[in-house]
Image (tube, rainbow, N blue to C red; front, side):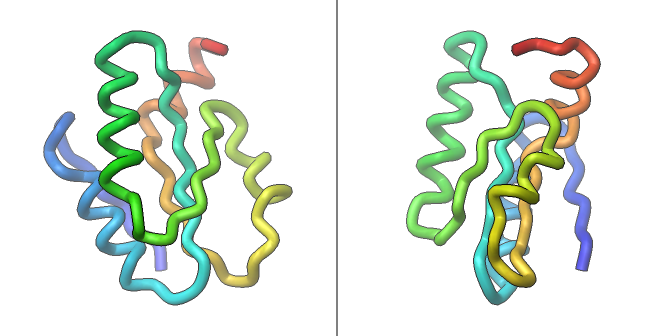
Length: 97
């Protein structure tokens, strides 16, 4: 199953996506694409980490080249939650590292 959760900033997209992922069996990976570059992004990251505590996600912080995730995921049939496509596209286009 592939699901796309879209909405405005701070609309609860992450919570909805996490709830969908929690319905899936097997290992759950959270691919985080946001780069921390200021206090606002730092606070958002802390909130996201806190919100997914205890949900069994394995977090991979990959702001670029998410294809690298394949070498870090050894499980069969994992659930992948990509957070957030907009961040990933911006990171790739602007090459912020």
